[in-house]
Image (tube, rainbow, N blue to C red; front, side):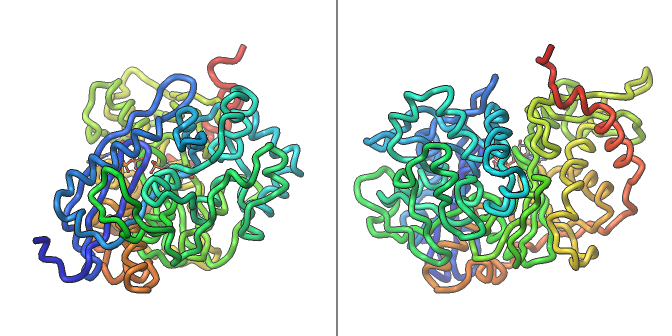
Length: 481
Ligand SMILES: Nc1ncnc2c1ncn2[C@@H]1O[C@H](COP(=O)(O)OP(=O)(O)O)[C@@H](O)[C@H]1O
Ligand SMILES: O=C(CO)[C@@H](O)[C@H](O)COP(=O)(O)O
């Protein structure tokens, strides 16, 4: 029916805005069927989603895949990182999940860093200095603001763990997603008993960390999905680690992902520990490391500016001295959780299109500032930057990254690299191959290369200067006295 050459596998990307599911031919990498269903995220002070809607969206996305999904021999779930999912004794969410872009735990993050030896000590033990995105700070926030929710919690999960557990009935996670919690020590590759004790979280509430290449479980009976009982379920991982697998990434090739979050990362053979907190020293899903910097304001912030101006997202115009720092949700890179958007340099002759271009420039500036930090020092700068995520389809995004990076930019034709990476992980279970090698065999990076142009240093310098001059405004935020 699917005319596939090999067995079929399913890869899922349960990210911030939606769930995407792909049914993939494990032999060729051909996408046989796909589906997508949206999520809702709360607005206002926090950012929360009900985990049950991720399951409903998964069912809907798989339903759209039709009969092909029924033939799958293995499945894997990639998911948005860091989110705190709290479950009760019946496995039901105690409350909505606190998401990666919820900055309410900024005070708890500052306190945790101070209380456990400072930024350098944290970077050395956990690989990262935990900011408000990290799960440990969210747990500390919950303990302080909703102690009754903490008391009702009998299991703590990440978004991809929650979905995997609903498939298998077993609480599992993987090293990639565990490394974004703050309670998994990259130094020992195990849960950190001291951090857990400090925040009052019983390790028995945490999932088992499945090793790369190990099976997480099999699909259990009695669920609404098309899979047969006994279908293999891979460990899954966080969305950025899944995309790294999906690209078959090797050290030295940087990736810039333009989605709800903006991320810049590379694979490294070495464990990283950045005491400034700019780079998170994540583990990847493969046994290596994934140094990564992340912004809270990317495609949605720029789309919001376009909507405010009444413009299409591609209606940019060049030639502006306007600076727009699009920190509508506060910001993580740079670490300004209380910041709001800031506009500087507006003139009578500034056009709407120039303002929109300034929003793109502001969003990309933050990511490129971390590009050299995520690469090993001997990385070859002539290697094209891989541009992925929903924004990578936009010409304005492509040209802004090209101009501000001064690097060649490659845009893979494959749309859903997170779901493809999950599919490659599932295929690896069937064939015994390394999932990154599976993705390379599938030629997932194939796509046009935009040649390098001279880097627009003037714009980068201007944005950095405004950022530095506006520091007091950005640090305190609009709501302070
Ligand atoms: N053709 C396009 N051009 C530019 N941006 C796009 C295009 N299509 C989608 N997007 C952007 O992609 C974003 C979604 O990206 P995606 O990577 O799917 O997000 P996430 O994984 O965080 O849910 C949307 O916010 C939208 O702004
Ligand atoms: O917090 C991070 C990375 O540390 C984010 O990258 C989340 O993993 C959300 O991803 P998207 O939904 O934007 O893909």
